[in-house]
Image 1 (spheres, each protein chain N blue to C red):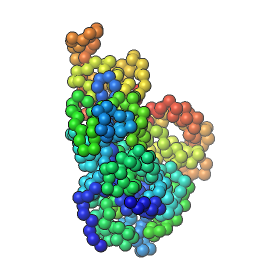
Image 2 (image 1 turned 90 degrees about the vertical axis):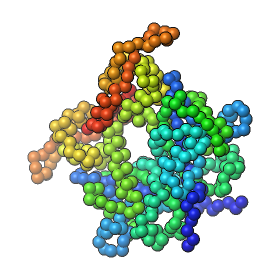
Image 3 (image 1 turned 90 degrees about the horizontal axis):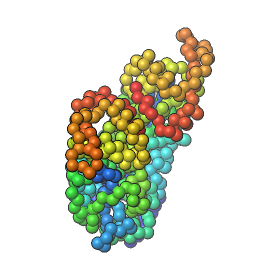
Image 4 (image 1 turned 120 degrees about the vertical axis):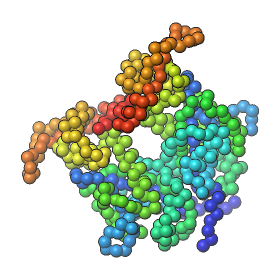
Length: 248
Length: 248
């Protein structure tokens, strides 16, 4: 039996990346626009994703594809899971697009989805390959995506919520010195619900992960707030003993 | 371009199932033995798994394959994730076996793993297809499995631990009326560590999910213990409001 070449794309397996970005106000998602128009078109928005090569593992493929399409690199990607509805790529408009870029557009494709949460300002975007643009769009504005990508986005949102309930994630999304109000906004964005301010502050204090700096904001157009810092040592200590719940 | 037939096996995508079983003493795992020997051989033990058909979704494939190989059906399977190391099926002994059963044994295979936790006595086993036996083996005795199945087992154990920390799972693994000592053993098996008895009982009371029956065990060769029942209504109520932590 002839050996298969190893450096070829696998027609049946792809990866897709859900990268969330926080801009101190709201949760955004990184999408590619595959259309030629100078304006962003809702009909051509998709998660950055593509087929994997036979010689790379799934993680490697996710990093490669993300960088190829959006320029984003050096982020921590975590697997969400596999999505394999036999009809996931069979919408008319998706088929036409696949026919324009794939050697074997009829092949069944199971996709493995990854997610990440980054501080947007740290990551300049640069679209290439079949991505004509790479853009951040507020998660709340997304109503439709290519293939089953809207469904994958929902699964990623759930994962993110679960994660923040167990691990105190998100501190790397804030400036080094931040206010409780900024932290509050971050949690509200991720949990996608309003959180009572007073309750939130009480729970955050109980977490015991913040260092009060006895400094206040400067040059802000409102009454300056107290500044806090994330307590890294405390975090490591908790991490070693297994986190308790950080549910809100 | 000729259309592909849809009712064919996909050479690149498989499913594997990690079914945990509890026997009131310890955690077991359901494995298939692919060997012809009348004795169980450590070298031929594997998770029940096989390639998917192009017309079924991943969940359907997992249910089908599990039933085909072990006779187990009507259980709740949850996805663990995808495993796709390019070398996951390249061990010499695994290759030989694949060559004996697959049309395209050289194909790269990414597997999607599922897990479940069942009360063993409810599920009679019946091996068929390439499974010569279907057997429960104590998780602690497993040191090696085919392909990357040992790694998948470790991932499943982690999932199970995470799950029991957030949801009070496991009550369906006990008899309707159970003792705190039986519940203690269940948690110890799943969390794979000793739990201080007194601490455990205190935390369990705090969970507020048990109904004390004011009955005692009968016909036991030791001092009979108090019997409890799982409080289903309370569970539903907590589930609606989002569970708190059940960490031990």
